[in-house]
Length: 491
Ligand code: F6P
Image 1 (spheres, rainbow, N blue to C red):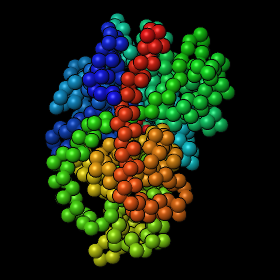
Image 2: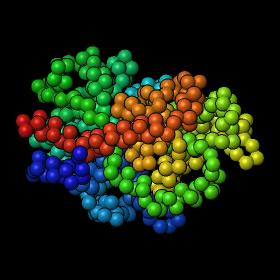
Image 3: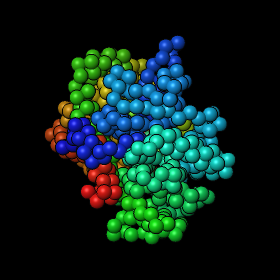
Image 4: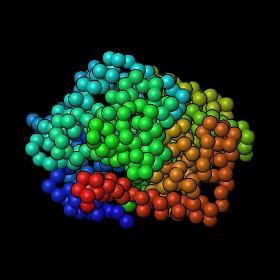
C-alpha cells in the first residue's frame, strides 16, 4: 500500500538531486480578503485535491496562477509563499496574469474552447484567434517562470492539464536537461471530435515536448495516439505506447488519479463531524428522511439538470417516497464568465424551483439547494449524512467526488450512483451505474439505491473502499515517478 512516507522516500531515492516542480493553472491555496481579514482556502478542484498531499509529502515548488485578491499581499519579494499555512511543507510560486490575460487564456481558450472540445457533452467549443494568441503568450510566461525557478539545477517538471499544452515544448527547447511529464486531467476525445480545433497541430507538438504524457484511462491514450496519427508527422508505436516526433520520444501511459484514502477516511471519523451532522440534521429537517446528495463544481459536464430531472421522475413514479426523501444539491460556482456556465446555473435554478413547487408540502421540500461555498467540515458531514450520492457526469476524465465519497463511507452503509461516462466507473464497478441521459432508468436506480438490502450495500461499499484504498493518490504519483525514472535513467 503506498503511503505518504513511501512516496517521499521514492522521490528522494529516485529523483536524487533533481528539483521537483509542479506547474498548473490552479493554485492549491488561495488568499482572499473577507470583511477586511485575509483568509486562505483550498479551491474546489480535483487537481489540487490530488496533488497537494503529494507536495506535502515530497516538498518542492508548485508554480500556479495567483488568482486570489489577497495573493499579492501574502507572497515574498520573489512571489513565493510557503504552504499549507498551518504546516508549511512546500513552496507556492505565484504567476500573475492581467484580467485580459485571464479572459483570453483561462475563460477563453482553455474553458470555452479546449474544455468543450475534450468533453463530449454537446456544448460547442468557441475558437477565437485573439484568445489563442493570449493562451500562447501565457504559456510562454509560465515557461519563463519555470526556467527561472530551475536556474542551473537539474529538475523534474510535472505539468498539469489542458491550460498548459504549449509549455512542455517551450521548456524542452529552452533547457534539454529537464525531465518533463504532464498529466491530462480531462478526457482526450476521438480524432473526429478533436480535428475541429484550428490549432490542433500546435497543441499536439506542444504536448510532444513531454518525455511522459499521462491520461486517466488507456482509452484516452488510444484516442491521443489516433489523433496524432491523423494530424501530424509523428511515428506512433501502439505496442510500446510511444510517439516520436522530430527525433524526440514521448511515452503515453494511463495513470488513474485518486485521493488520499487514509486521510479522508480519518477525517470522516472526527468528533467535530458528528456535531456538524447533528446541526445539519436539525436545520435541514433531515430526521427520519432518506438523504440523497450531489456535490459538484457547477459545470455543464456534471449532468446536474439530468440528475434533477431524474429526481422529478422518481417522485412522479414512486409517490410513496414523497415526504420521505430529500435530495441535497451542493456545488461551487465555477468559470462564471463563460456563457455556457451562466446558462447552466440558470437552468439548475429553474429546475429546482419547478420541482419543489410541483411536489413540496407544508413540511417538506424535495430538493435542498445548498449551492455556494461550504466548509470542508460541512461537506464531510453531508457525505456522512447521505444514504446515497449521485455522480451523473455526461463525460468526466475521472471524478474524485465519487472516490472521496467512498473514502468517507467507513460505516460501509451507503450507495454510490455513478455515471457510466466517468473514468471512475472503470474502477468503482460496484456502484449502481447510471446513464444520465436515460431519465427513467436513472429514477429507477435511485429507488434501487434506497431499497438495497444492508448486506448488499455493505458488500459493494467494502469492495469499492478496498479499490480506492489500494489505488490511492500516492500510488498514482509513485507510478508516474517510477515510469519517468525508467524512461530517463533506464532504472
Ligand atoms: O477536470 C479538470 C480540472 O482541472 C480538474 O482537475 C479540476 O477539478 C477542475 O478542472 C477545476 O477547474 P478550475 O481550475 O477551472 O476551477
